[in-house]
Length: 147
Length: 92
Image 1 (tube, each protein chain N blue to C red):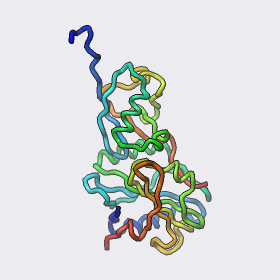
Image 2 (image 1 turned 30 degrees about the vertical axis):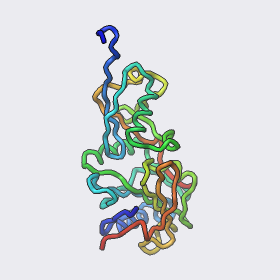
Image 3 (image 1 turned 90 degrees about the vertical axis):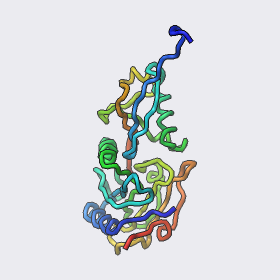
Image 4 (image 1 turned 120 degrees about the vertical axis):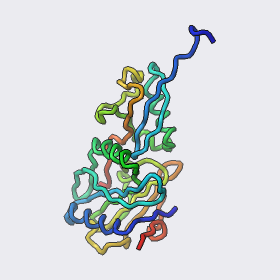
């Protein structure tokens, strides 16, 4: 599968991850898109969350409020993007506590608290499988950025 | 079938997940656990992922207790329940 990413989504994501994480805490944003346009994202939303240098937690009631907002706007969530302090990978906690549990949902991990150049270098991308669990993807193949 | 032996009519509730709503039918006196199952099926949640997702009443804070009947758990027909993880997060 390929997820089409609207112009500016990656840049906005880095900006928010850097600003909120301040180079010392993990941080998370999610990518949203119109329900009527599968495999397309054009929005960046930052969940209400807490974080330290080694983990983040999303406010659980925020999740329900987010679902309601998405429904009102005819949108859905297709991917999450979070930072790690050093290398990018999916930890067991990343696997279990992801925001969405649907097949096809993507999780992109950005290294060095997103303080490096905007782009996919050193990133880690994984997708939820039909049978459960995750499969690693090549970020440069699975994400197509609109110019 | 006579009125005495007719199965009780099913009621309907909407389930909201990731901004999408799906209708699920239920009997008010069945265990809420079966409503959970029908909700997972409606959204095609893979079996290994299901234990992470819970149902909440429209107030978004009251858990639908799977061990009670749907009625006892506070579910009202034609309302929208919220399906979400009990927590979200990562790494550590």
